[in-house]
Image (cartoon, rainbow, N blue to C red):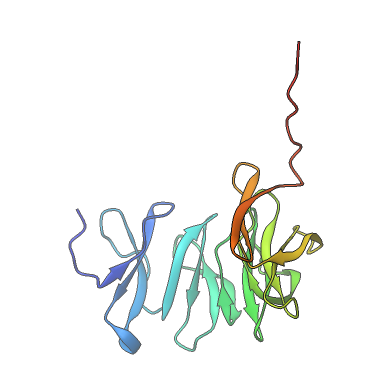
Length: 185
């Protein structure tokens, strides 16, 4: 069992957990293994869970980058915000807008969204600047696959995503996944 020496922690992911020491502005984050051993220094202002071998962290100066499982900074902290990697891409914030980077840190979808979710089943829910707060879905090249029309949208799971249009909530089918037809014999 891990001794209760931390003030807060995220769930374990890929064998490591982000944990916090301290409260408020003096809080620092680091990562521990399942035996409770620190695997990084506690120098981060904020930290996210590991996903696809990388974890988003915020440095003391408020910049976000990504570390590997040894604690080495592999994507330099040059972003204003950083989401989790999924399907090889992660949402990052640059000058108030969200876009996507690949695992090398290269921007593959230019920052242009007021909000951006992780990719799932080849699509990501984004809120385009100027779309009056409506969500649509893009593919990994940044092309719009489903026009902005939802007041909220969640990621695709098993071919469908939960979306709310106005006051109604429903399921949206993933257009990238062929729908199974009923066969009659």
